[in-house]
Image (cartoon, rainbow, N blue to C red; front, side):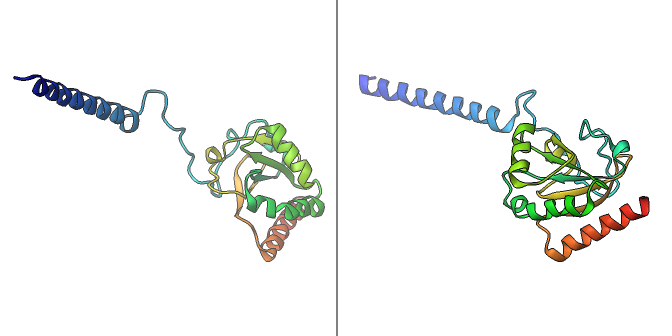
Length: 177
């Protein structure tokens, strides 16, 4: 066997070994997840009856009576477009309904965003929206004193839909006091 054939054989073996190693690395990296690196479980989509009591820590559901949770993000253009409605909510409902902003951003960033938008809320909480069953922003969740969702509105609402939300919130608050 001459030298060129030996070099060719060694190159073929080296190429085969390298290809096998690459396959092993790709399979382990992309098809078999490493322990402890699994994605967090998503909660089922929020619906009427969903209990948020333990999902958004630090909210006094009982003391609030009724709470409107604004699941929004400072990265969402529909949320930005909805800011006039959020200001209108506070103006027309006053303190009859507590408003909690649930945002994925750190609380300081969320508070700065809300302040610059002129949106007044009673509390700001940092949450992973998928963990409370919110699949898209903006989403509004009306929650009763036991922490259960009683109403849901999703997306950028049209003016007629905004009026329906306000009417619904007013009629429910008028019945309760």
